[in-house]
Length: 89
Image (cartoon, rainbow, N blue to C red):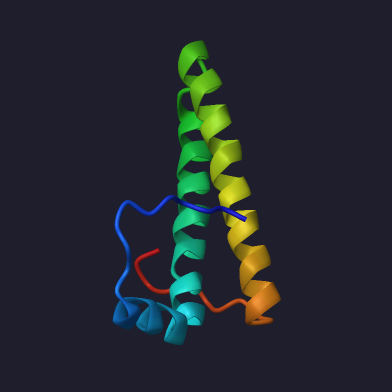
């Protein structure tokens, strides 16, 4: 699981709010990760003749789909079901 270092302590009120709304906040990044992976793959198809770009972007595509997979695992472990993508994603 990803753990980011904290540069300053969180207030108890902030922590309580996050924990009270943890499920909905976890659903939010899933469509964004999926969209990012799709956009990268689209760029790979469009600019397939540019070797340096393809090399860099293929790594990014893998990274984004791994992010999506990890978010899906967390959602399923905690909420047991995925929500529908919101409009705009």
